Length: 421
Image 1 (cartoon, helix red, strand yellow):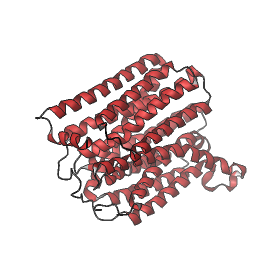
Image 2 (cartoon, rainbow, N blue to C red; image 1 turned 90 degrees about the vertical axis):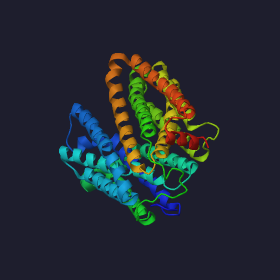
Image 3 (cartoon, rainbow, N blue to C red; image 1 turned 45 degrees about the vertical axis):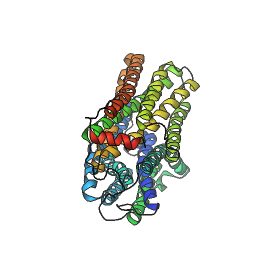
């Protein structure tokens, strides 16, 4: 196989591991961040703990938004391997540095660096997976990478909870690096170091060269098609972010679920997403075009969001979580795949923009749902559901418009043809 990836499957396994460890690092921090602020940084006021927990999470997301397009473009010029190695090395050092900080400004700096270097891994791993494979095999790879990200995010909280609880039986003075709350960050940094070695040994050094077997290797990027899929990505992640916050608020305030059951709902959502992604990687549908799948996935998300305010029990919430998880689990890899097909040789740049917009959309959706829930929860759910319903309809309508318009964008038509193979 030409390109930076080795001929063996170990090269792609290294990409899966890189994606997994970056999302593991994000999920690891979330449940333990308030405790870390209290014990390591001496932030004891409940209001301050809540404020800085949110801001530290936001700094990470903001860094992803700002740096993903830059790293993606750099990988198009320099090759995937050096960018992946630099990203993993920086991510590992930033996670290790966060475990060592005892000053709040330094903590913000470490989280920003972690997000900035994680932004070098997520889109570049996708761009590397797109090299030199036919459309079906590329789709499977994208599904596997999405499954790796979901698995990492799902495993992070469990890992941090386990690691933080093991040393509690030992005297605090015997703890390494300031206490048990620092262990998850140290272990995640160690995992990133191991993955760095995998990339170093199993990914070739030479810059990326696209192979003639890629049907779109000679085609320029289609700005119109890529732009459309980027907008769909923004809307999908906005809906996912709003649903996550809305589910937490609805489950506790309206349904009256305890934190354990709320956690079960989020776990169920992640597991449904993972199952859909693995199913698509093993048995990609051939009778339905990706455009119909995108439209159907947006409809599932819309039904999940619309059903949330009417869920009056745990099992009612479980059903709407399943709908949302199935829709978003299908959309995430499918939209990345469509961006890859339409982007021509500029894989890194396009997928970097998609990573940035996905982070931005999820952040805006989360913040917007939190602000609007208090004033008009029902109106918020209905408004967002209508936007997603309209998106589903417009997606299919635009598909038929371009497929029937002989004067339309030629590359977009070729993408449509490739997707319907």
